[in-house]
Length: 254
Image (cartoon, rainbow, N blue to C red; front, side):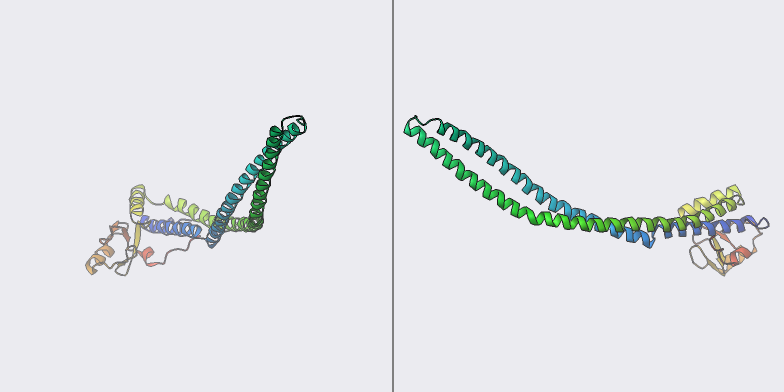
């Protein structure tokens, strides 16, 4: 709850503390160790997929070669059967024609044997690729199971941070209403420009925003300002608060 007895600058500091807590929680969420482990598992999965694709490409090339050989063998087999049928039905034909058909049968038989030998070679080449693909599939199953577990872990870890973040954002919304509109607008403008810190405490003679020391005369001037007067760090330009609130440590995130 906001302290209704506090002044606008004290509420502004409280708002800054909450905004800092929000930024820290968002950074914590973005850098969760569970996220890094998931990223690592995804990288292993991608590397495996690349290996699978390379092996599958080689296997597909051999499979295409085998299919082509099978088509050629089938064509030769059909051609030889047709020639043999003509040969058996041409027993009264000229010897020269019979010899030509017999030669063609022998040529087709020899060529088919060559193609069958090539096909056998392709099948021998394909066997280790098939075995490798099977091994990679087993490895992929293990990685996919690990990926699922890592995703569940990340969801759980993010939920913890989100719950804490929700509490801080609710407190911020409440605190925001206690800061006057013109001061709030100025703060938001500075916060967007200055890396998330638009208001800082004067701690001793040092600005907690830029961590630089201010001249003693400037520090004395700021501390003598009437309560509620908005001062600015002459080093970084942030709103600088010197009050009882500025001497207290930042309130812990809720």
